[in-house]
Amino acid sequence: MLAPYWTDQCTAEAGFGCACNGCGIFTATEGTAPNRVFYVEFRTRYYTNQALLDYEIALYENGAPPFRYVYGTVTPATTPNDSLLVVGTKRDDSFFTQYGCDPTGGQNPPVTSGQQLTATAVGCGTPTPTATASPTCTPGDVIVNGGFETGSFPPWVIDGHTNDPIVATNFAHSGTHSAFAGGNPQQNTYCEENNNEPLGDSSFYQQFTVPAGGGTLSFWHKDCTNDSIAFDWQDAYITDSNGNILQTIYHLCDNADWTNVQVDMTPHAGMTVRIKFLVHQDGFNPPGDTTGMWVDDVSLPRQCGTQTSVDKGPVSYNARQQGNHAYLKRMTNLKRNLQLLRRGLGSTATNRNKTAEISLQ
Ligand SMILES: [Ca+2]
Ligand SMILES: [Ca+2]
Image (cartoon, rainbow, N blue to C red):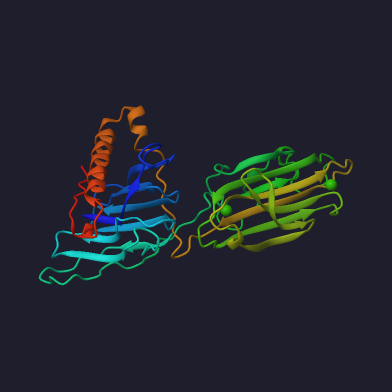
């Protein structure tokens, strides 16, 4: 049995002491044989508690590692539960690995948000329980297409259309592409005075969730102007998901070659925010005293110990709507097994000696 977070939990939207919108058990397969990874993600809630949980099991087809527990959101329970919380694995009462145990049933979880436990296979013949889990870190970047090397913006969103920013190839900090805001690139004006300066904002942003540990957002910008800051400007912001400015990273009207900027995201940890770049021009023609800004290599690396749960998109219960019988069958089995597991948890102090099998079919 794999027990990433074995305690009393629920996924129902209503009833039975549970009101858990958006909860469920989600699955996805990534990669190609023989190196596929099968993920089972649990978005749950404690019974009679409001605190939400989000964690997953990653099963590795090639066995390296055999499996991993990934904890996206672990919130301590607000009240005790008579079902112990155990993290570990178990074959039977003689062969098991207990990583941690919380007798309160969730008020003092042995794992935290952002933590991962990676299993290591050990040889047989040792009946003594052995702790084999160890925290690891999976690198990755929160920002997608931060170097604009796809040649297009998505998932960046253009929200300032005077004029629309473009993906440029005349300058790049790395690779062959960057993003350019301002000027009038639609009429081949980047920072020349061609009597075609627009009046308004040229801007784009990307929305993302800041890891629990915050991290450092880094990007490079290259600036040009023929004007002064009373009329034109190059700006960078952190905004909320409605576009309200939380932090002005800079407000400039400069000529500068590629410059690196690093932003401590700790104040925004766990929040859904946007990184936004904006150039304002005052449309002063002639001569068209334009202003522009290139942006490249926007990056927010995930930190060790702050890996968030990998979201594979809607699978699970959507399978019913999509008529995907294979997924539906798998999810039905998972739901049934969770019910068995939940039932197996019972309500006595001997819970962790009980066995409940999860079989992924
Ligand atoms: Ca680039
Ligand atoms: Ca101007």
